[in-house]
Image 1 (cartoon, rainbow, N blue to C red):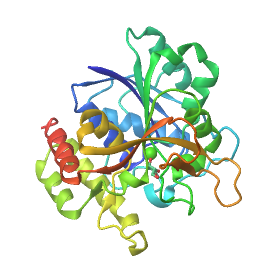
Image 2: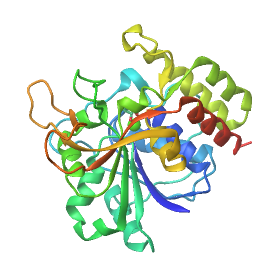
Image 3: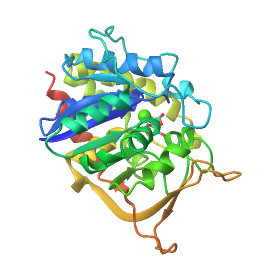
Image 4: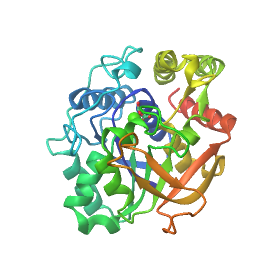
Amino acid sequence: SRPIILDCDPGHDDAIALILACASPSLDIRAVTTSAGNQTPDKTLNNALRILTLMGRSDIPVAGGALKPLARELIIADNVHGESGLDGPSLPEPGFEPQTEHAVELMARVLEESDKPVTLVPTGPLTNIALLLATHRELTDKIERIVLMGGGAETGNWTPAAEFNIYVDPQAADMVFSSGIPITMCGLDVTHRAQIMDEDIERIRAIDNPVSDVVADLLDFFMIYHRDPKWGLEGAPLHDPCTIAWLLAPELFTAQDCWVGIETKGEYTQGMTVVDRYQLSGKPANATVLFDVYRQGFVDLLAKSLRYFS
Ligand code: BDR
Ligand code: CA
């Protein structure tokens, strides 16, 4: 099975990505690290522990990461994810302790000790990943690929130009996209097509186990923010689970290799991912950018995975 490290800021969709990964025997989760983003770093760490406790996965080492972005103050998304970062369901308190080491050191140790290259799956701001690359250059060869949720070719969701994860720490994103490590970018182009509808939530609720019940409650809450007609969405975009779904079933997705640059300075465009779809820059592709997903297949994969917990 494929070794992965999840670096996340749970976050409703992060939690569902984590659950999808835990349900899949073809993925070997070597560590879960947390970033500051959807909520403050203490809360995202606590949420990762609570979700793993719910699944009985206290065997997975967890560590908290950077307290704020590399060069700016932290922005949180409590308007989307609530006061706790995971508002909605009732969750168990953490049943185990995080590692005492920093997320970056845990990632480095896992990479060093791994017999094969490890895939990094960041679903929050890229601060921890950038710090890892900057402080452990010698471990670059041990990273197979970075499969991230962030950015978008067509639009932003936090500013007109920028998606939340990239906007929170554009400097970190720039370091990751210019690292030379193979990247899969699950941006808003694909995640806005990976929508979960009310009837899908009912289907998930009917699976009726402790994990699927929590996922249904998470989705009910996550739906509230996305019901605003301004988004033009029928359901809620399941951003972060696209990363895991791509690892499990890449055939569900449409992708194109592109050069992607990160705007770190623009007056209106900070945090924008500039995606060169038509090879206008002359720069070599640095990312596999996902543009579309077979939605029904994606929902079926999620539902099938949740039955694993019955
Ligand atoms: C991203 O921002 C967060 O709110 C979500 O967890 C996702 O990672 C979507 O822009
Ligand atoms: Ca996230």
